[in-house]
Amino acid sequence: MLDIAPYLVRPGEPAGLDSRDSQSKHGYEGGKADGEAALAVLTARLADLQIRLWAESRQKLLVVLQAMDTGGKDGTIRHVFSGVNPQGVRVWSFGVPNDVELAHDYLWRVHRLTPGNGAITVFNRSHYEDVLVVRVRGLVPEHRWRKRFDHIVQFERMLVDEGTTIVKVFLHISEDEQRKRLQARLDEPDKRWKFAAGDLESRKRWDDYTEAYEDALTSTSTVDAPWYVVPADRKWYRNLVVSSILIRTLQDMDPQYPESSPELDGLVID
Ligand code: AMP
Ligand code: MG
Image 1: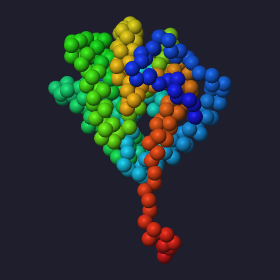
Image 2: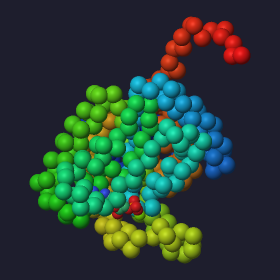
Image 3: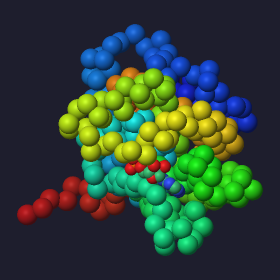
Image 4: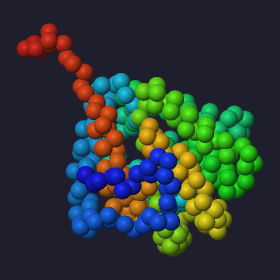
């Protein structure tokens, strides 16, 4: 398992995206093959922790996953959770809100999908879009989205107070890496389905998105619901870091199998 401390956005300190290297391996000496072998070990560990969480059924984990387009959210979910029992993990993806969602406050659609006891829930995009794309594209005026940092901190604190553990992960890619990945989506027939024309518009606003992310991560990384900025230009390293973050978080939760009744000891089924 990797040391995840370098990736934490320390509460009260700037996220400092421009000084974080999206290609970094932070001293990890291995290459891709080593990283993939290491991930297989971590995946088994994650599966074990997930079963305990499910069996204990008293705690719950919310994983918020954010990234620029092509940042690797889908691939991260696919790799990091491979080998984990699908029954205990829910993934919810949040796209452009529909009319009913828009008729409500922006937390309405996410709140009802937060995890219940024993579950791990992954938000593939989240309520953070409401201070990111909404801000960059001017979908609501600043006096409204600005207040949302505060709402979000309070909302997450409420979830934590009521028994949810929250961990938030930003997959950090460089502008050049995004260029390569978008190009690959155009060039490789099997990847074309992922290409959205709107991605090019967003790419033009790279600096605005970076600024919005910088503000969002800085304003909402708390002791209770911390953000991690994961170097994500190398997919295999990204997977190792995300897996390590989840394992560390679940280890701290320390889920236990429920105590079995002593009456079961020595019982023989005939
Ligand atoms: P994808 O994740 O590639 O399926 O794209 C989903 C799209 O939905 C992205 O372009 C997001 O920016 C957009 N989206 C997600 N949440 C919101 C929101 N609250 N308001 C507007 N657009 C959103
Ligand atoms: Mg997309």
